[in-house]
Image (cartoon, rainbow, N blue to C red; front, side, top):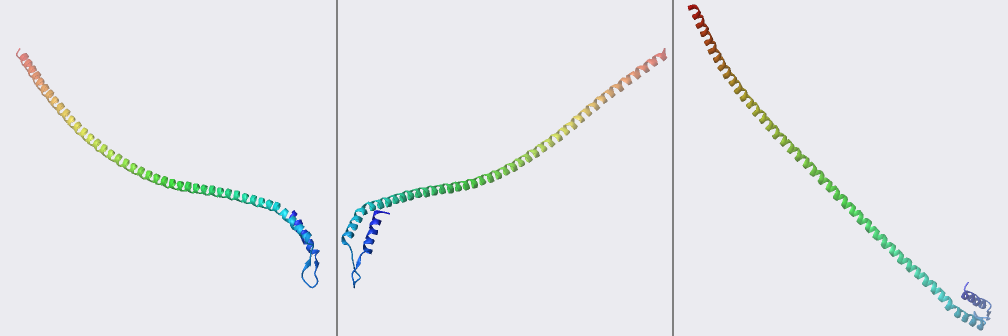
Length: 185
């Protein structure tokens, strides 16, 4: 209990001890006592007022500090939320770009495979055509060479046959000539 509270109770006690004036609502009080109590209240009031003001100032300072701290926390939370939203947006954008890049790469890959297959088919077709042409050409050359060899063999055999026929004819004539000469002898 503060000094002022005690002094106020003393003031109440003085008023309670006051004597009633008959036929009125008024009371007689000890004025000196009341003045002394009021003077004591005045003397104690500045100190208690200072204490109360210090408490209020301290409370206001604590409230201001808490308010500043709360504002800083809110600012940090908002900055973190913005960062998270920005990161989320960046992630979404990156995922969308990655999906687009993958789709383009798949499409390009399919086109390249198709082009490679077409080129391979074309090369294979050209190679098959060239191989067929080479085989046909080789077969024709082989036939020509075989015909030439056969013609040469036939010509050679005919020449040999003619030579053998002539030789046999000569041998027969010589034998006939020898046989005729032996008969004459």
